[in-house]
Length: 321
Image (cartoon, rainbow, N blue to C red):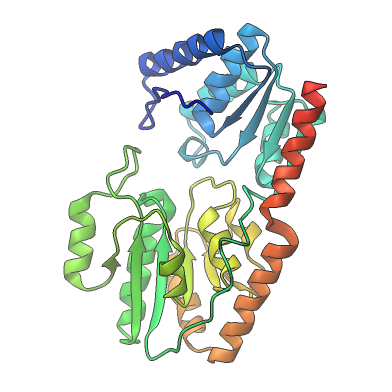
């Protein structure tokens, strides 16, 4: 297997830098001449799709969420829609990770309905993320693991933590994830250090293996209003038998059955998130264990990564044949 570095400005909307990305992909495809191409995430789907279309290379796209451009309806949304519509005109198949994104693309006529399907997110490796026993509760640990972006609901998490800690001193709130992202909504290191100094959260840094941190937590929280596909952090937590609290929003709600394997809270509402956390704190351990078991069963039933792999292989086989 060969790896080729690709220049992508993850930060923003500079048309010159994105043009460089397009021509870089175009050059790689001319050099490699692949039999087909699979594109994931926003900019590779758009610029990879454009390059593959120019060269007549069959391509598959996976929409892993719509990101910040679709949170509010702005000129940026209109521009990105045009790029999607042009880049996906010859696509062989488009996979979405939730039905809301598919419905939006069809409603705005960005892709033909006949080539679309919905996958259960990226799936989760159930052998790697094994169910883990829930620890005793002399302290209750809430964990948010994500890139530290405002759009991921980190601010709401911290404010909810303030409210809950004022009434429940035994509750702990942790942040795990990359700090210093080039995303326009990235949270500064100074802000996180201020939260830590205040005593409201613990910052755990970043890691290549989240399993020990999930195992040490009682509940994984993601109050995101980013246009998610299906957040892997929620799938991984549920696979390990952890209840989850997340927003009733696109992508996030797919991983949770409210009151069964976790709770859904309102978007951008720290008070409602705090209420759900306090509801969690009031539950006895055996109920939490059962919620975790229900989450694991949901992952086995709906989100096993083998389901995703088999769907991809079927479409790739059709293209190659």
